[in-house]
Length: 573
Image 1: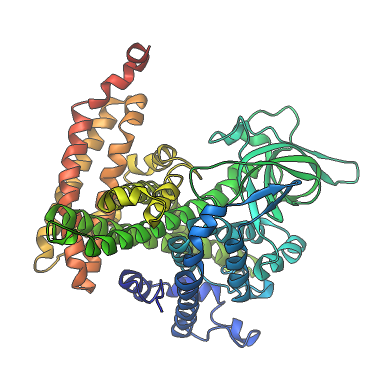
Image 2: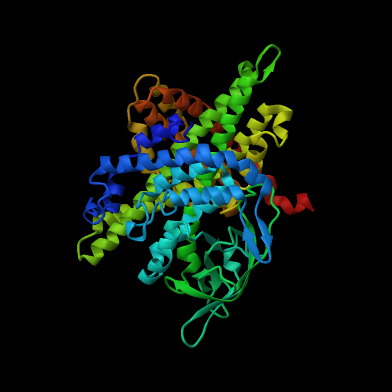
């Protein structure tokens, strides 16, 4: 029997080099949790053993239970009848299996029946589930709903909602988007009003809501009458009861097993999460950043499935007396796919570790405050990793979701005409991949979100340390290439800043963000190559290619290839 965890050598490598000691120590309260829960880990080694066992369980379920049902789920999809949504049979069965295995509250504390695991382990689980069935991830991955209630809700709210998520009784949805408020959430109009007794109610319409039929909904609503921007928005939690009508399920290109709904709230009772007016600027931004990591893992899982399909087909398909696997142009495509997969996985888990550290340092600071202890050192580190997370999260989503579309495209190309037929998995994967660089913020919005950190050279201190580091053997040549990339980036950055033209910065943003990513990912791979000889090839292929792309990016920026964009109205009219 296959297992999407133990069969994946690169995921095994990432797991073996997690370096989450500090994060786990904070989560486990210096490993004192075992005094209350005898199954809690007693040290870091014990925690890693727990994580591995759970990931093996998920890997087994993903490979042998979820994946075999994915084609039927895609064919059947979800259905709406009499205002009620029903999942495909395979989706229901998979959710039941995951709930029975107690995998629906991975990051939630044990007091709410959760596993109390770091975000990084949760993202590994999402990657494997997505490799099996990307649509199921859109339900399984909405555990972020519960995490938001845990982070910002009251103790009563946590007690009311979180055990239901952990048991699998509840599924959730983030009800943010509206017909006239897609990426621009400041334009949200759904009305939240309060009666004399303090009870909140919701009235209005939400659209394009993933798993909108969920039992528990987090809803962004306008709580301040007369307001028109994000400062008038608050976040609410409510049940998907009879006052919430599913008006339609969208007929989508892919991800058929996940219902995307239009919802009408008819004076729906709700509870305020956190403080009024902080709905968008704090709570939703936190929620969406978590969702962006989830979609990044979804894209990576789809990419892994597409790569495996391409390799297997290329080895089996014979043309001109030999397997097409041995045709150099096909072999080269497969190698590029593999290098992209592994470099993307390195980026994703580097980012999740930063996010984990940020979140756990914040929790530690709150605890130290409550205990009346000093937290200055933790606070300084928290500020630094918060900025890093704010840069790396959108950069990761941009890179991994764009890559998923390219990898599925190339995999279908390797399949030839057969891949265009529904009998082959790649046809579904190509359709499923297409949404990943659209929802939870398009690639263009991720570039905008990352651009501030890139313009400020946020990682300069880290890069400067890497530049001074001595890499041995063949890695020294790759280190020199990364120094060249660094110099070219700094030259382009100076060129852009000297122009002092905001519009030019915006049109050059994609190329500059890509330049920054080459440096960050390149150094991750270089460090990994020091640990594992197999990674030397990955680092070499990635960095050599990145240097060529760097020169192309720089050419586009400095030759002002974008100058036509400054006169778009004249050209397009």
